[in-house]
Length: 484
Image 1 (tube, rainbow, N blue to C red):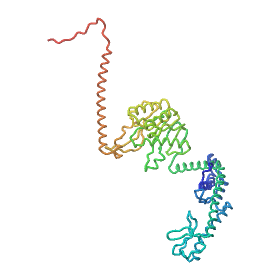
Image 2: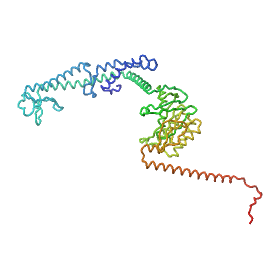
Image 3: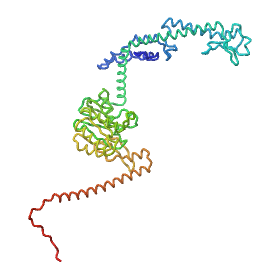
Image 4: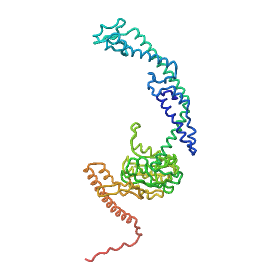
């Protein structure tokens, strides 16, 4: 409105919203909280704006501003007169057809209009001998002729003139109305902001009551969430498994392992959402929740490239990771999912370990780090402020069932092949993958034995090298020979 781009329907929509403002204010009349009382005080009914739109803009206006049908009857006397002139002319023409049929005796006579020739009287060829002398031929067709009369031309001129003037006047009147409404834009914006806040609060209250959210303790010394849930995922699944979360100042970092589809990403996301919801003043989906005040929530989840920027998936990941390591503080929440997967296994693991150590030793932020690098769990075991969590899976033969429950300690396996099988990967590929795993395990055992043997030989060699030298003049040890 302030930019004068609103059309008539926009104004009617504004009026419809203003109609409910008094009802919303009345619903808040018994509110006691400072926030709701403040919002109620900002719910200006804007009666002047609402009354202007109601009196000036018809209920179902046309969208095109230049085609008329915008301004309500009774708003402007001149416009009403022009509309009356147009309606009277159109009614005269509607009556003309019946009058001319009676006068000429031609039952098939029609009165019509097109954009080229305007209004006309059409008579078919067999009836042309009945055409009165005051008819003036305007157009010849294959099976008929079209005529006009002086009176028809006069009425047409009146209609067209009244229509053009009415359209122009409507446009001018609408612009005046829009300008007046636009002058109240700041007041309208304040009311809109208050209504938006009330709407958001009502939505949060509704979902909290409907889905059994709890009132969190905000400002706690760490995360202590019992029976936490994801507010969106739980609505899309028949049975959602709640899980606990504990991140304290003494142990702020958790490395989370487990199979794909076991629930790691959902678990971390629901922790981040709990922090956001609690800090904005909402109840959270959990049995109970103690949540600290965090300065920022950092996430490195998912993978996508930046084609327009010429950055690969791994480059995007590392850029976001750099931002986190630079800006996170001990009061931040950091959520990392599969850091380092976009490069070689060795490099990816090295980056994951270095990041874990940096977050633990240098940053101290509350951190959830999901990974398939199982060696990283050993790193977490060696860090005083870290712990391992894993998502359980139940295996029966070649089948794996994900129970979506978090537990202490590291996962024993990733079950990637089993997940591939469940996803519909062809059996031949799945079987070959199992063979490759077995071959690699056997080769690894062989390398381990070889390395162990070589290490023993090298150790023995080093011991000989470090043996003390004999002193000068010392007698050599006599060799013992067998008697021949």
